[in-house]
Image (tube, rainbow, N blue to C red; front, side, top):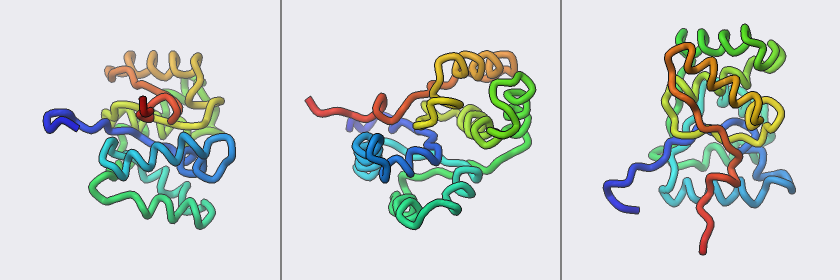
Length: 158
């Protein structure tokens, strides 16, 4: 990597960690975390992701613990994040039941990550919801957020 090239700061939701242990998502998830360990990306998580990971199986917790400290950034949930999350809920992008998903998007937006990645195709990586999240972001004075699956951001050889 060129010294002037900045590592992408990627907000990673809980599904990506669990994806390493799921047949459908294993290959791309493992490749993503391999590239993190090789210094290509910085993983950004929030307090909310950490709370969700605490309820995860041991192998998921071990995966999280294996991320090098220099490649990890933890975002605390602030009033600003809560306000943006509440704006998503008020605009019915997701219901209260999916409060944490809205909080992931808000934390990624407020912390100005380059991308958020997720395997949650219903509430996060969803064309119509992405438009709505970004519409609220713009109305609230924030920029648009790139939202993708891990397979869309990993570096492929060749």
